[in-house]
Image 1: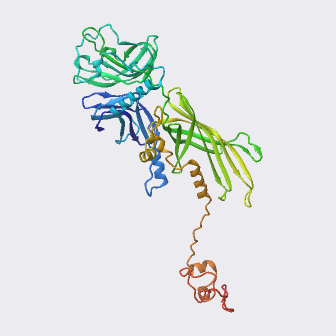
Image 2 (image 1 turned 120 degrees about the vertical axis):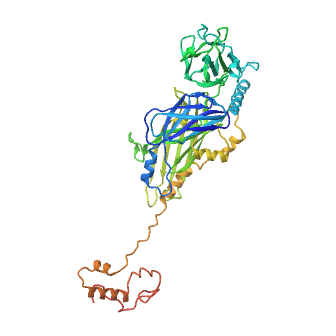
Image 3 (image 1 turned 30 degrees about the horizontal axis):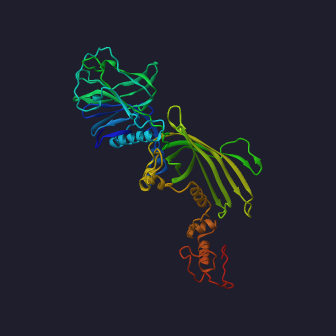
Length: 526
């Protein structure tokens, strides 16, 4: 598939819809016009929710739900310049020719990273104002374009090693793979410590040098390393280039770590259950879930001092604000409470929920969420219903499926302003954002109101009284007898007005007065 990138971006993901379940593995790569190869994507398959067109049947929608959305995410930062690219996907699974490539403007991203480091130097008392925010090791010229090199023997004994005198985050590594002007298809780059431990291993992507494609391998691992010496190991060590003095050609950029907690904004998939714990009769023994949501898509907006939980229930979006009560560099705990008084509704009840939301990182670095709390349903006695009081234990857990937010949330954010996790005090835009959709309590009240509305029955169509109707009504009668009965009905007083004249008043219908005596005619005989 061919595509063009108008500006240099840091790639965040590639999305490809696929028909069917497609269980086989699929590999993805980008190749620019110069032949540089960009690889290293993790694959996540999401079940498509399907889009029902107007007039489509439920069976049509069921077929569309079987489709998958394939999400390819770079394992590290991949920066791609403006230009033409070829996107290649290999494997099976009903791939379509539709795709979406998403990224962040590279210049803006670099400014953001610089601002983070500036914030760290300003707000961390352990940092010195004179401290160098970043360090460069190896051949600094490797990070520049159109640089010429003098290459030595590939068999030189020196290895690409660098040393750190303090804890640093590795932002970028480039190794020269000019390989006598042939370049080399990007492979794996690993960082091995002096203790023999592998601290990082990831797929590199290609960079041009002197017009040669893949003449350098590049990775942006964002890995935190303690003080010590580290070896840059290549999956193909023979392609590493050296200068005339026998020194390996490589470049490492490291920056001081920024101690801010993770940003938990993203889309999560959770399972939620509500278990009844007590009634008017007392405690309830362990039983099944009274209410359950499986694989429910929940959006979390991580704002200054507050979390906003967003979801869709029966097609209606809702929000729930949560006040942060604990915030560390590892986790966030927030609380929400809502109550609704439905005493004016036929339910004559009050409902409430009090819960805690905990967000943290799993061992694999993936954000995870827990919700735990209690719910109450309380109804006073009335003429129609007796007293009722139930309590519930609410439990939910899930993991982040993607950083991207659902389209309906992004649309609302675009109208209300941005929101996210920014170190330090939130800005005015964040403070003004508020919740984006009607509160959860309001949604519950609306659902109950709709459910309790009196149902208006559709009028029953009356069958036209033709000859067949009379045959069914009076079986065994002759045609002559049926004709007399039909005539008697037409002329006599009837409690059912003419079907085609339901509102008029004629000589066989009365308005405000009793029928005259003797006008009635027996319907079962002459």
